Amino acid sequence: MQISVDVHNYMETLVGQVLAKPEFSEQFDHEQLADLACLALSQLRPVYIRHDIDFLSALPEERLVTLKEYAENAVAAAQTMVVDDRRKNRNDEIPVIFSKPKFDDDVELEWFEKPILSKDKK
Image 1 (cartoon, rainbow, N blue to C red):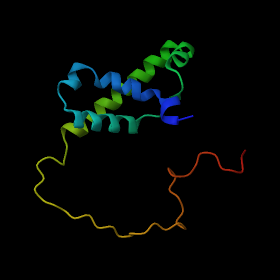
Image 2 (cartoon, rainbow, N blue to C red):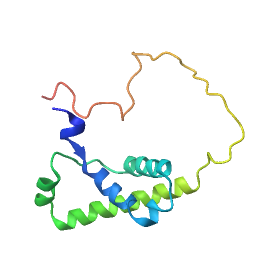
Image 3 (cartoon, rainbow, N blue to C red):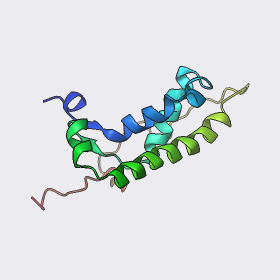
């Protein structure tokens, strides 16, 4: 099994459908569309599936409409970030300095780094 082939996030499909509309595909270049996709998908809860047809056949119509609205709202929110990109016309080069060059294995994980289920709850 290859996860990238056998399993995918259906929200990527919905965000892709929104970004394929002329209002986005004609206004933004490839790099900006990729930024829009990343920013939009970061706002959405993933819906991992194996086969679109099986998923869609079991999904109520109201839920599909809701998921599409979520995707459209996330892209609209991301659009404002790309249009107002603070990185444009920057003439100052600020060096990146890492305060802790080595990763400390003893540091407690952040909430988003912790597994949802612990090993104890099998």
